[in-house]
Amino acid sequence: MTPSLIATADPHFASAAVAELKKANGQIVDELAPGIWSVQASGDFFALAELWRQNPPIFVRHICPVQTIFSLADGLDDVVETAVTTFTHLLEPEWPFSVQTRILGKLPIKPFDINKPLSEGLAAASGAPLDVRRPFQILSVVLAGDSAYIGLSLAVNNLSDWAGGVRRFAREKGQISRAEFKLLEALEIFKIDLPPRGRALDLGAAPGGWTRVLRQKEQYVTAVDPAWLHPTLQKDKAVRHLRLTAEEYLEDYPDTYDIIVNDMRLDARDSARLMGEYGRYLYPYGMAIITLKLPEKGYESALDHGLNILRQKFTIAGARQLFHNRSEVTVYLTPKSG
Image (cartoon, rainbow, N blue to C red; front, side, top):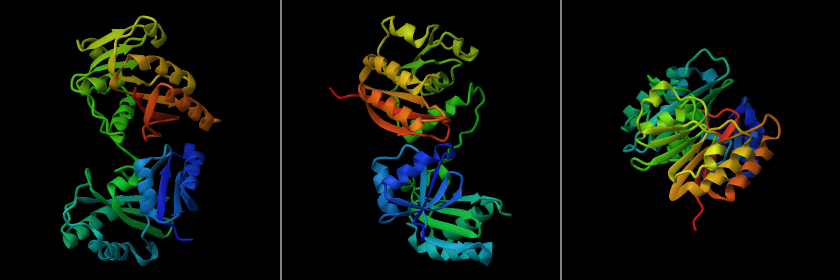
């Protein structure tokens, strides 16, 4: 059975990702590595890509097409030369492109060994501009065993612009915690634009990673946590720190906010209930972001329960298990109309 795509997810949530693939009528051909499968889609890659573009899965992070399979036994130079010949006429010359290579298992080559000659060959032959940060079209190359799986698609078809959904952020001077990457990735994947000089509420804020990101986005932040914030935030006049629990602030007549964020270490269901109570303090045009912490066992049930609780007070605009998530799912919420 010939695969039509390769799908990627966090290996910890492999069973949920496989269930999403099967629900979309995808049939697993082979597991190429933990959390990475070759799949035969019902129809073709682009039909599934459009379905998931409109209604993205939660656990499958990235998909890419398989339009041809080359044998690595022919040699790397032959693979590159044949790929340039095969895909040059398929590239739109006016649109920026990139080559994204993943190597699964132990092979005596690195992604750069493929990316550089393949990118240069395609750019010279097609005239399309190379842009690895903001590509409009992507040639995906996955090397596994003795095979090279290659396919061309638009970036919007792949669920993520980044190979395998691996979104890396540069560590910045002054960064408070790695949790900042979770919020940055959520804002990017859900395409969230924060209002200019908005009012933000950060529940369970300490030590302040998410508060720092919100301040970078020019938000005025109320940070709620009994623990102290990072010293740099204590000096920030646009940060109001309330040394209360989120439950205590709820009893203290909270203000109304443009955005409410919650990365608290609570059971998914308890966190969802608390967020539901804060929904009344969100402006009608506002938004909320919450991470639902999932147990080792029975995480599907816990997630379903948490999402159902949130649906009582919010519209779920997006839910994804992001690269920077651990045992959790990030959920993007908007107030219910009316």
